[in-house]
Length: 329
Image 1 (cartoon, rainbow, N blue to C red):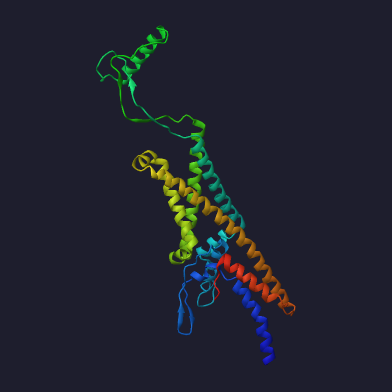
Image 2: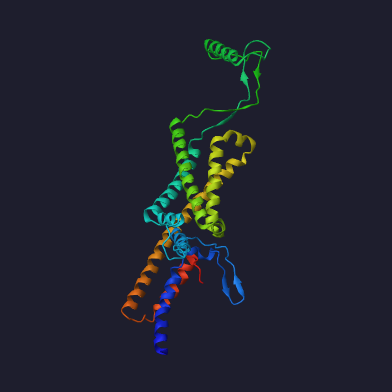
């Protein structure tokens, strides 16, 4: 009996390790407490970058215990599980990554267009020639234009030489804004703006639904998810404010323009980091699934794991913990 028990324990050990390796990433943020004697460990903030797949696995694991009622009858699927099954699909993840990269490219394009084709140039109007021959400065702009035209005509008839008129100039001291001279560029900027707003709204809706699925507390315990939500909401607010209240904002504070440009670089870094993280997580998930299948095959054929088996598990554990921050308990 002791031998059979030891054999069964040795067979079960790899299985427990596999379950550990495939434990959802967000398990560290669950509401359960881990009891070890009299010591209770509360969930802590996860500063890692959780993958979308691991978040979906966590929600599914929470719903497993609730999938049957007291009589053992299966309950209908919860909307949380349905949502994350949808999010976990490969085409959806690829679509979100494409949207992220598109948003980054749009930001670079807008920065280039604003630098090469400024939409507005401020011109200081020091003075306006009146040349009315009168000391009165109360004439209208139309009168001033007519006087200037007559003055230029008389100068041309005099061989291009003409003295200054007695009335002098009307100083205004105001700044004017030239009209946009690049209609095509202006149209492109408008199209890019609405594409950006659409992408940000898609991300915002996804984050809000994910927040409802995980729970507000669990969601904000994930530092990267909280950062993602913060970047999206601030970006959306700044895009709308800067687009529709551009003149008012720049008149009140010139630093708003600088802040808006700097925040776009934050969005660029955030988008690239999230895409790179998702690609890395997908590669490690494939390795872990491969180890799991190998262990199952060895168990079915009563083959003991090789000596390097434990080393492989330890390496995958360390790498996956570093990139996915999965719960070790």
